[in-house]
Amino acid sequence: MSKGKKLRDDLQRALLPDERVLWSGEPYRGLIFRPIEAFLIPFSLLWAGFAVFWNFSVWSADQDAAALPFKLFGLPFLVVGLYVTFGRFFIDVWLRRRLQYAVTNRRILIYKKGGTATSKSVDIRHLPSIELSERSDGSGSIRFGQPASLFSGQNFGLWQPTFDATAQFLRIPNVRFVYELIHKQTER
Image: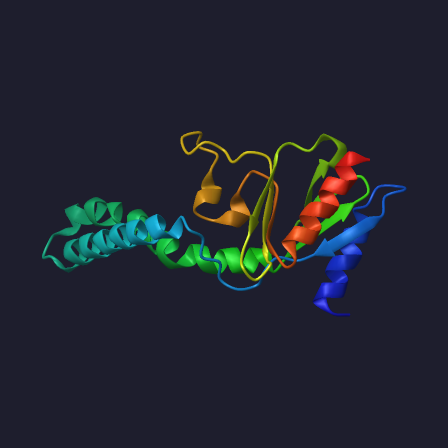
């Protein structure tokens, strides 16, 4: 059984009685660069560059064992710098490979397969605002609700879209069709 078939079977088990799937799909599998990356990439390069410089300077200097806490202080900054510069892209790709999306006659479903399978659903009759972002190739994203404020402490999705607290279909093909299908369901 293929991975895609297994994921679809798992999604079927998440359905409620009398619920039927009108559309299902998966997000884009490759790297996603969003407009915000024009800010995030230079910032992450500065952060990581300083963290590498700091750690190299401290660890290569002649110091005694008493300076060990000072040396260890820079390591978390180095780890964060490497994550925001490179790691977040690869973790995002890895997480999106485990996602399955569905529009049913009753809900919007986002199903994530993994060690602990999770699903997020939004009642289609009580959808918050719907935001469509469409690319020239017809793919795009649909966000169900407003993004968290930058200063709320809940917007890690700024750095990594799969961690966004707001339910969304990330970079799906033929996004306009799915968007219109959702609107037709909300009118019923």
